[in-house]
Image 1: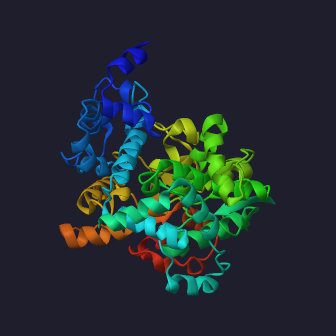
Image 2: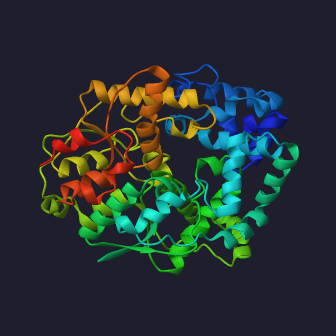
Length: 171
Length: 291
């Protein structure tokens, strides 16, 4: 019931987040702060506070959230999500916010590197020739090839490969 | 022999052969056969979920499809891989709409997710296929001098509703498995808290401060080592101590040991067979406590 009520008053950005995979639960938040007190990052730096990220998103601060630093400072530990009394899937909401930011071309450098690794080799951590050569010395079998061809078909079906091109154009 | 498709992931073959060696040797000794399937890819962990969740779910499902086609359940060593694959597997099994959406994408790669296989972390395999009794009987080395600070990392435990690995606030499995080897699993402050590893590369200073807390707390509790399940936690805490030395001028020399390494040592596998030179924090003192 409360859910429906919130729905009626939801501002445009929270509706946009709700429609994004992972963002469905954002409007359930009642700002209790259990997330912030469970967050290992918020204990170290004032730049990130999950309750604030949700609050500003609900308050329609679209530009500030998508171009800011905060959404990239979640360490994805899921402590907040595990403890949220309202069952807001906070870590997933943050993925949804990051997914929207990326679509708008706001891509931190390290994420471009992950995406490139995936597209080129099917791995986000590149293999090392040195370690690969030593495998027989340790009695390890040769590495099986990665399924790059199948992967590229998936990336092209979801438009992931285009996201990466967009990033390269932007930079 | 119980057979599993091994999901190796990216970080282990690229940087941590010591994890792979110890896991393969110890699991073989305990009667678990690991099958290496071709054409697996990255599991699509949080760094890729951050870019696009739909793509990430599809990639995880694609890899589960390979195990389905081979008619095998899948086992992971890396906790990050466990989370991505087990989460996708559980989500798609319980959500028909999502499954349809992902299968539409997978059809482009000639795959269909059926949802008839399990994704397990190797600790679950030890619990269910080997069992604590048989494990205990297989131990040949005395680890009773060791005080071990277990650190399961985040993604074995959470999100617990999907992973169903252990109680996320009071987990017991990892500690039981350590004690079954004869070592003592000790309590330390903030034991379940994140290592900060996923912030490496974006906010290195924050990541290092979180990792430092872990090392300090385990040191204060008198641990002989921190035992890990995840190659990323390992890297953050092992290589991390080199960075703590250069950044904070603090030297802890806290050995970081994957559980599979501890298991291998307890089963009598010789240290020289375990590629231990890949550890940044040297293990000589630690090894001298085992006999």
